[in-house]
Amino acid sequence: MKKDKEFGKLVIELIHVLGQMDIGELLWFKAWWLSEMECMAMPESVIFMGSTLVDLVIQKKQEKARAAI
Image (cartoon, rainbow, N blue to C red):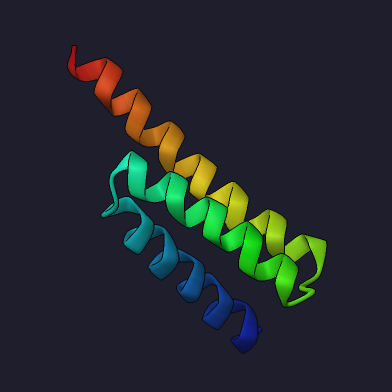
């Protein structure tokens, strides 16, 4: 249970950091993430999780931009 909480806190912190980036930076980070994780032979689930978090943050930023119009 403690590890689940720690993992959840790390995910929240990562989302916070990603949320401070602009869309261009997020796209660069996603490409870097995919490249680095594949080079390190990380499990597909790890690669997918990071990529999905970036996609969700980008989607949220695009929704906010559309709502501001």
